[in-house]
Image 1: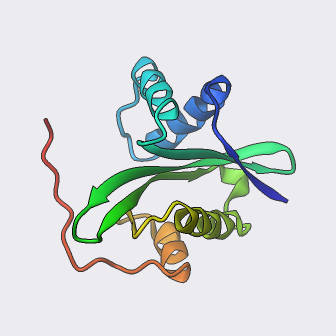
Image 2: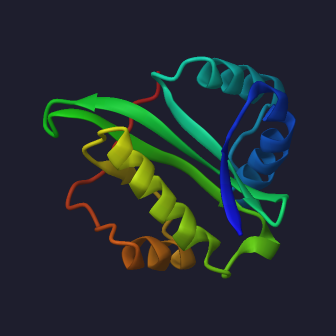
Length: 147
């Protein structure tokens, strides 16, 4: 059975070790002290979003984070599915699909208007999962400006 447990401050170390694994997949920079501080700030301010540990048979197998944004275009609060990570042994067992169903249900309860996400072009399994779960390819180009 899959359970989604809201992350608490006492569980940050579990989350940080998975984040480090997740970031290493695409060689993203990961600084433990920085991420720990960010997680504490995020967990302590529900206006920023929500985060859950994904638990299967009493074992933590992943995590998912929704970050909130206010959008005039979509007439209210939307979310960015910032991170969804499953450990290797939890992949291709339907847990990702269950997680996305959970996120959709929670998003309705939170009155969110839309969920955005991004993924690396090489991640074809994730692409297939999101499309199968009802996500659509957005017709806009995502751009960034780093400050």
